[in-house]
Image 1: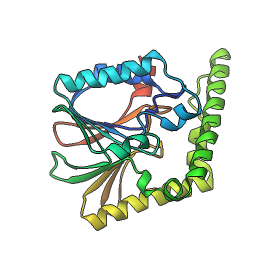
Image 2: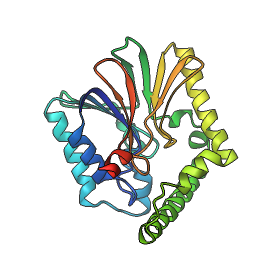
Image 3: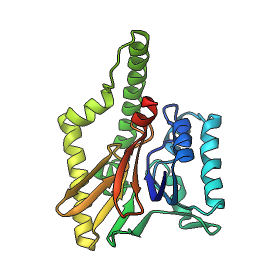
Length: 249
């Protein structure tokens, strides 16, 4: 498929749970004029703990650079996990590759969107980094448990898409409260700045809905859900759930 723009976030290259191979397959089957990488593409936090970098992660970088050489406009928005890039911003490499903290995007529907990873609006990440790092450890543990559960279900031939991490995000009161607060803070910021919408990542929860008349779009992640936001040439924003598409083939 060919789109005007594709928005993805939270690929977390440098971790064992990054769905790098699946993301390469996604790029092979989906083209665009503009590719927005909305933060946490490279996980500097995880690499600092333990260096993990399989060939598929290098292949992702090469694929993105190849697309930029062929004319796709690639914009990398930094996130908290790839904050090591921030002291050097903005970075412009050639005509089609730019690295920055945020971008204002005028869509085909004539609406204006702020594209930001979202960590600047997360009070825990900004004021209590130690707690955010601790939470990152906990998330890794949950992902590892998820991995074990998937292996057990495969051995027992159990057809189920139940995910522990998704259950935590959707049902644990503190998690739900954090997500709601995060979304409302972003919506209020958009209202104050006069934007029509927000495109973000950070919380690994893909979403497309209106909050206080602000169009809120979250790209999700490429660790578990493998989701993307796309803008069609008709000016419509859609969610692509690539994990479901490939699992059905």
